[in-house]
Length: 131
Ligand SMILES: [Zn+2]
Ligand SMILES: [Zn+2]
Image (tube, rainbow, N blue to C red; front, side, top):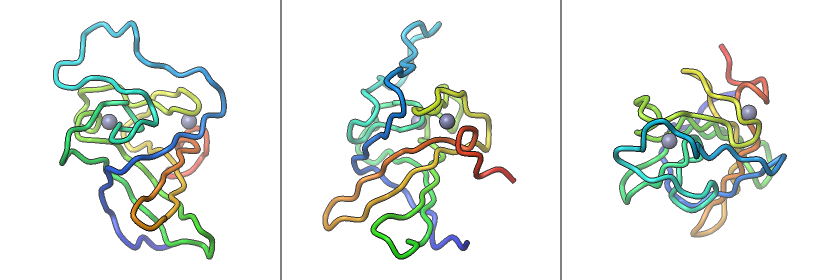
């Protein structure tokens, strides 16, 4: 499997939830200093830490070539806030806290003018992305 490009996205995406329980960090010890938390799945919201991203702030991700279908595999690392360690990175599907190097697994659907990303799990619950 070859990587055709590491690129950044900030288009809207849709989360695929296996269960409805979502950890929103309600009892966070310290309020976020720089960014507010958005609803997971909202446009321009980091899928890893739910930070609301301003224009120009992007999510680091890696997309793989399509296997002949309409979607392609994508690994999502996170945004500037959670990659720097300012925010907790967690999987929206299984709720696991992601360690350094862990990624979210998603499927990206290319559509004219607007692409959609469905998060289907992380490297812990999908058992991928580990080296
Ligand atoms: Zn983030
Ligand atoms: Zn997971």
